Length: 247
Image (tube, rainbow, N blue to C red):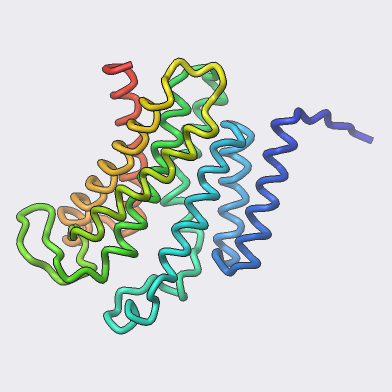
């Protein structure tokens, strides 16, 4: 019989993945395709990256799902609700967790690079920032296009509103706090700098999403999930840039 010696981190990772899947199914956060994608993403992120990254993803999933279900009836009345009552499928999972999965794969082949943690958490910060901006800001009638600042209907791709802008900052800040709480012990980045960078990158990534939505999604060049993926991946590039230039 084959015996596998698992490290403490690997055992924690597997436990977190199982908890994530059970919780997601019990609370109807993911459909079957979403569960399968979350299994792959969770194992990739936690085993090739670190289980602390999965904690941030779990916070994103729970907080984002709560925001999706917030004032669902009002969103339905305006046709702004997420499909399937907010139940997320594999496209949602890959769109928001694909970037951090790629960072985890990179970390497996090139471990020990300090910017990796910042990049991983920043991509999740973008995901939650954009989700809260969309779900909470979609009911704000004071929406304007990010490209020309002209008034547009609430929920328009590339639209910005005061409520959405604040919600975007709150989402980025939430992941920033989580990132600081679980930062590596040997990190040379101060906690305040880490918090600031994750929060700023998350908020900026949300604006990237809006720009892509206005310039490419509205014209049919990209779909919603492609835009989400590219926005979260922009968080990785911004993390690398800020780390190399400021730290």
